[in-house]
Amino acid sequence: MASQSLASGGRCRTRSRTSCSRVEGKIRVAELAALDYRLLTAMANGRQVDEVEQMAMEVDPQFDFARFIASLMEMDVLAGVSVEPPL
Picture 1: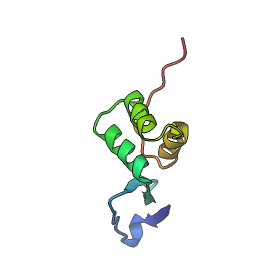
Picture 2: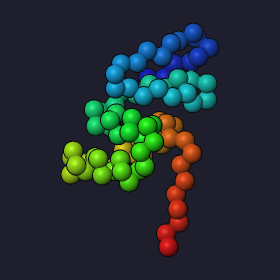
Picture 3: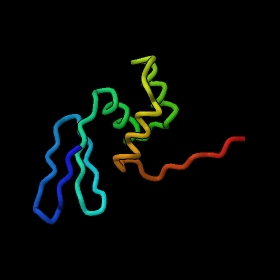
Picture 4: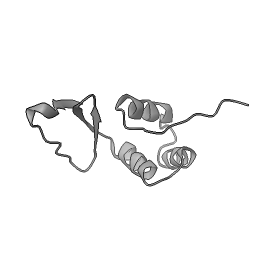
């Protein structure tokens, strides 16, 4: 994952499968696997997490969805996430 200071005049140049986020004044760019990118795009387009998980399982039954969500949280890409307490 690349990190560049905005103060240094850096630009965020993206390729087709990257994620850009801004954390504490720095731009973070991460290259994503094809399926991760597809799932993130689906979420950005309003798909619910359970729908996105189903999409992943249809493509790759061994897909580690928890790893995917954790990586998005680590990249500070997710916003407005809430988790309902168990019943």
